[in-house]
Picture (cartoon, rainbow, N blue to C red):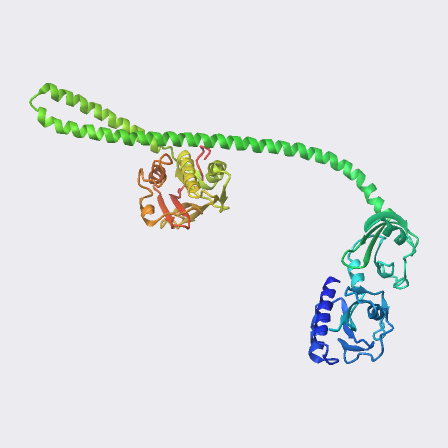
Length: 500
């Protein structure tokens, strides 16, 4: 009704602004037809002049030349200067012999005089079709004017259309209770006791009624009572199961956190050992250079040469210590075995999610990929954590890290895939070409003091080299970074029996 009223208001304004518009103007009639096409529940739109005869009509040229001055929807606007929408009682159309509900507004000339009425003839069948889609069992749905006149009802009963129920129950009682409510009452039409819900509309002088048969109201409650009691028991069992699942989830999170902390501790120890080895190696090189410079100056002093020989021996021991530190920092022990990469990546995902933190999401973008490679599981896990930590640091505002696995290349011998490629892609700040070329160099870092020692990607490169694989870094400033790790696909069909 609001959409109908908006169209009526537009028509009223246009007619008020153009009082000299000739009757049955073709352009204006085309506009009326255009508006009518958007209102499928309106049968016709027409304009009545101040003398009661139709001046514009979507039914033209079959418009009846009869006075409508006796119609209630016309008389309501003659003396009442209110610009409000008027909704009339159902009337039988004189031209098409069908019920319609009139929605009208007054037209005024520029001098304020009555200049006619704009009428939209709404068909009650729209409400009938709409109400039939709503299940109310043996109940009813009805729409009445605020003065109690019935506009339409479902199920349909044309014998009561346009009848006033202002003095009948429950209409008489319910409006005294307020604009909305629910009560039990017997229908004045069929005498059946029903529960009645009503609502007085604020946007129009209408009252909506919906009723349900007492049996329909109570029977579902009775039939569902036992079901709900049974459901309560099932719900209790479900709650116990959910509690157990929650405990399992928390336990898995705790174990993942412990594994993450262990991996981070090992990484920290490795970084520390690498830093110590680097600094100690520099000192040993300085001392050895000094020894080499001193030897010619004491060539004739055996005691001094003996001291330098002892110092050389100590330097060899120091160099061995540096090598051991670097070995621990880089790989500790390399224990390779045939491993299913897809399964290993899936297993390490909880650790990676912990490493990424709450603002970063880890997204696995592969499904059924079988890739058996000979690698060290522990170092692969450490490598993945290393790369995720780098990706996390490149996204201070959060984002996503995507992990993909696919088979690439082809072996000439048997045409089987040559490589299993693991790609770790972030949405971070990316790298310049200058930084990208040095990223795998030892001790190269773009992080601030205390944030990294530049050994992370170098350790990744060392691990890939030991696996006889390949490492590729694709990056562009502002477009993120992708690290691709390629491992030779094993000729064996299955992973080893070590649990990998």
